[in-house]
Image (tube, rainbow over all chains, first blue to last red; front, side):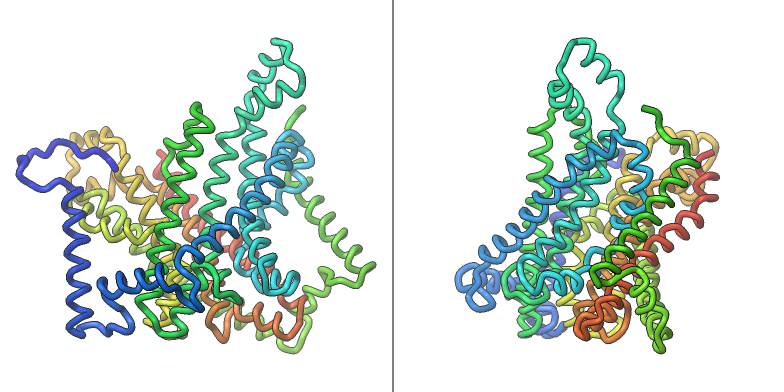
Length: 271
Length: 249
């Protein structure tokens, strides 16, 4: 949050933070009143206390078929991590290699651009046709979503390594492996990691839609099933969980980045 | 190691793309799998070719409609919240709270609220476009160098004129970037909403092709969505090329 300049009008006015807290509070209370008095249709829009009850039920009893909140989070998480890790393992070495081969890169560049800008979710029916309705199809889509983003960033990272750094390393007598591990990789890593962060975000967006088809486990399945049974409060609790998990993933990645690369500046960029 | 020249790069790019299609064609021809010609034939070479165009037109209407509304509201609110800090804090609170929820997670609720018609699709695309545009526009306003504003003021600009003559041109590059990101999200949102509940549009066409076992048509639909996304991005870039050049001066 940006720091606010000292107000000229005096210090008795509320700070922006408290203004925001009050805004949220007022909105929640208005929503509760509107829902309870029937001003808005409760079965369509629900209201906060009902959502909280549903969230409690979800954690204790589960929905649908007794799958509890934690089970849904776990299912979604597993799919994201699997697809994301597999994609990173494939894309990073390939991207680093391509980044050092400008002529080969120029040849595959249009293909990468096209593959990257394709709407990942449009591949869902294709993945189902190839792999059947199951975990493979879902993980494959997450893989696809992450692969091209990490790949293009790894290429950029490798291509942007300052030749001066490599020359210095060479004149210091580093072996080829040392040069790679000590100089080249650390120089390319911030760019790669920025790509990995974007990739996780994309994976998270894709998985929710992917889970709405052919499964009852996972956060996407949860909200989709809740709609089928007209259980609006459960759908909203599911969205709250999704928002929470997404937020935690973003925070986790930021921490990981700072821990892995204290020299990196990419966390200063606008997210 | 010398980098290839731009002309060389374009030539290599074309070669690579043609090579890819040729290899695909040969591999498909020798194994009997779906080749590039099958895909083209599935899309254009049939009696119901008009069908594909109808689906595409409907999808584009959804994307552009939702994108226009989402981007318009996003830019307006982003500039407003950045310009008026106190009103901005109030408006930003609910938006920031909803932002971590991916637009596609709204699909079930949107269907419940607006039915399976155009309303729910427009809403999902709207959300897909709104959040990136709003977030980027607002943060660009928030980090806008105060020097610009001071110079503007000392030149006698005030209020609305300071905003439209100084602040908005200064953040225009960020706005254009946010619009391009939003366009990508709009396409994703359109496809997802058409896959989950629709009876027309490219997303529906792909799903329908799968159910009828028409692999080539499915592939055609997927490639067509990709091509439309790239085309829209190019048009967007062309539209803003001149204003961007002017704002950079």
